[in-house]
Amino acid sequence: MDLQTLVNQVKEKRPEAQGTASRLGQKGISVLIPLADDPDPEVRNMALICLGIMGGNQVSELALKKLKDEDGQVVAQALQVLYKHPPVGLEKELLEAYKMAKDESIREDLPLIAGRLAPNIDSGPWKELWQKETNQEIRKSLLIALSRMGDGQARQEFVKQLTSSRGT
Image (cartoon, rainbow, N blue to C red):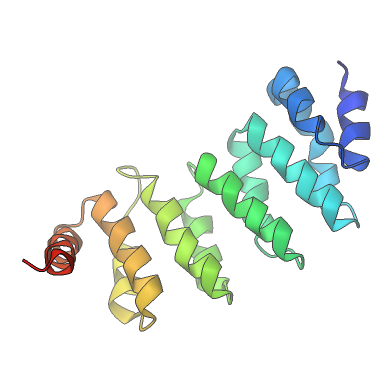
């Protein structure tokens, strides 16, 4: 398998591109990154699927940028990439993406992704967001993330909510 085969499979939106991406590994990243900006959203989506298989910091950085894509499926795939490959070293960019996000589902998912960076992430800015957030679903995501980051107050609140949901 060569890199051009992978490019062709992604452009043709063929599912076997995923297997090719897996076999090629990270050496295929350089040919897929340009396809993540293709005019066709299905090509962008397939490129992100394949990049998610390959992983790495370069892929996580691209996925953060693709959160602003106009196509909902591309954004959803970018979130999947970030779940699989949390953006190590890009904590500030992740926080900024959260602050800039207008879509509620993105604002629910990004704290959970941030929580996956624990213990190597500063929980302070996320705690400030939790304290100010009024949307209950987003607050819940922030609470889970902060608990994972080791914040004592969030952990106490998490346990309290768990206990109250059991009725004890």
